[in-house]
Length: 272
Length: 116
Length: 121
Image (tube, rainbow over the protein chains, first blue to last red):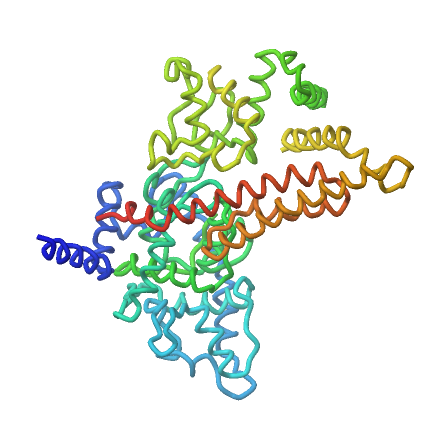
């Protein structure tokens, strides 16, 4: 009897330890299908504009003359400039850096950590003795905007090898933990009350949260990456934000992007 | 400006022990309303429709007929203090439990909401 | 916002009026200032001790990525008030800093397991 109980306990612990990201993703998708039955999963790449026809109309008008167009152009010229040692960004990335964003973030087995596109850009500069770029700065925004632009239409294909499960689980935990004085988890707004009206803002689905970065936000008057949005979300609920590209934010981005696997990349984009 | 000065006087009266009874219920309701509508305090309009309030959200129920819904004032206070006590899955911030508002401010907000 | 500021400023005003006088006398060094300077020293130590507790709870929350913005602000303003010699105001802020720091630690501990219940199956 006792032995049987131990075996049951062991199985219980084992099943908790073995994470299954794909099962998580399927359940995540199913959640939104059931919660917002009128909206195709693919449509969520437009965020809140997938949920409200009038707001979508206004947004489409803005996208006719996209505010991120200059960023993409600037990014293209910055990307092609050679470093002091004669090399360039193209030497750091697969396929010369073109059309590769769907594989970011990835888990680097040698380093044992999650590498986002922005971190890879700075790692590339490091390796070539160039100064790091500010993650909230314009230059980083422009270069990543250009790289995202060349990846448009591709579909997210994030992998979670066994060695990466812990990082993935950390990110998942960050997403579901309540935080800050207001006691909100990411899932509070973007799952529990998704589609609801917070003042005049519609709460978007997290399936689609990774597709459109970097994004020109009118609130920022600048193009910025997904982690800048994490920072802002944290502060909006009264939690202290973390450093850009901190381990916790990279793990969160890893989890969130995995949840977007199979979705089309449509960055850069504009948001209010 | 006059109303602001009035407000401060009301607070003075309220904060000095012993003479807080000098504040009328109507004045308390007005003070509670100011806290409830303030975006940096109660910010109740983020999620609730309230009479007189502009640009309300629609996450929680509209705040109407509150005496019918909460015949017991202390149940309403508890809901504002820590809504998770009644429903652990709530997204309503714990205004008292997390010191988002002071105890006095919570009481004023309760007076206002209960008057709706 | 204006009203909130008024609430705070009015509260502080009362505290200053009610409690800060002995401190000033002590600095001037009048003949009856001996006892009062001891009081001021005590008050200052009390605030210090609460601030220390708040700092350590805040650090614990921060280590778990669960610190709150308000705690950091209150710690700063409490220290500033203490340095300015306003023990009473410093005490009010330090106590609230401690309260929010402890609440953020409680939240962090609760969330160690609570998050699992929110994952869709």
